Image 1 (cartoon, helix red, strand yellow):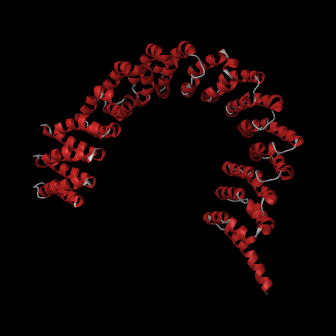
Image 2: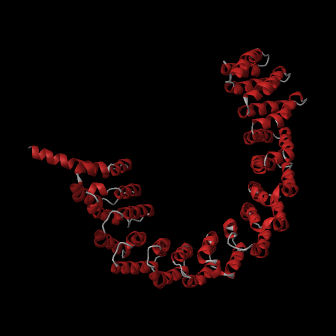
Length: 588
């Protein structure tokens, strides 16, 4: 009787799993997969290998979400089947998962297989794993052949020369597969596979394979060969090998598909570094100019994006004579993305060509970009103004670029003014406090009187950021005296803006400034004839009260804030009384 009970108990975990995996509710099936390790522990390693794994192998007919979870779990399952010497038992279900139609499931199965390879012995790899690759590569459905492409790199170096030759042969067949998806997968993995193959075979086998893929009828395959080319070049050291790839590089630069040309443009610096400019000679210069003049905006944008790194490789003379004339023409490009990329990257050219040539060739370009109708273009110049400043200096910058910025700050479009305000802290950080006080301080204060509320609000935020950059003492001497001057302004909006500004600045300045400068002025407005001013005094005190923690400020709070708020709490205006009562609660 006991034996029967023990047998039933031993079967129980499998029975529960079977029930849950057959349940109509997908969440129950998912939970069952996520609990596989617990069930495996209950069964023990031997029964996991003999019962659970075969059962899972037969269960691969479910929702993609469940199969994805299973593919992931099996990658971490080696300890539950008895350790590395039994790890090959997991290959069966993962092989089936690697042939599933859903891409994410296949990719996860391949990832788990590559994880298991790390613990397999060389013998297990040759006996079990290489057989799995052969079967997947020879599968009827393209799905299994696609998955096979991702398994070569992890095992190649651990196989005998005979098996290595077979693996290379299978891979070359996959690169010539009838199905574009398989050739695409083979092209994607070829860059990694190249890094583990012996150099003599790269020249005799991989370069011809790469050349075929680079001329593939499908642009989705050709564009993947750009990365492969870089990988081949980086793996080979001798210049004679590189020359073999020069023709392929020229073809890819002039490919009929813009996607392929985009990939070349996006990897241009990497390719030039790998091939070496001594090999490319004049080809690099011409090819880069062609990419800058490409018919597709995406290609032009990607080519411009290479400026900061690519221009490090070439002479100032080449930059000035060959590339800058074309870049200057792109200021009027029809695509805002091209102009935006130019505004972002062109400032980096300054350091390559020096002060005089920057003034001669690039300043007109920057000025034109600062007048662009698209805010992002203007902002990109402003954001990278430090690159210009480093080369031409503050003096020249203030004479040339700054007037354009000041002119934009008075633009009739309030959004343009807003964009300038938001970038003032960046300019201030880059140019320093002295320059700011001389050239931009009055401008920053003038925005407090703007007719648009959003601009006044942005101006206050701007002053807070500047106070954090330059410090509390700077605010005390430079901006707070000017703000306090608004307290006596005849227009109530100026008095209101002053209260808003002091409320914001309170958190960024020293307790001394709050005590000696802010509180007396704010308190004087508690008896203002405009109710809007009085209730904003109450709101200001509500905001300031939690900041008043030093002994001196606590005294001010008790002797000034609370009495004033009690008076406002009996104000004839309902709103004033409401905000005063709220502030009193906070001030207690």
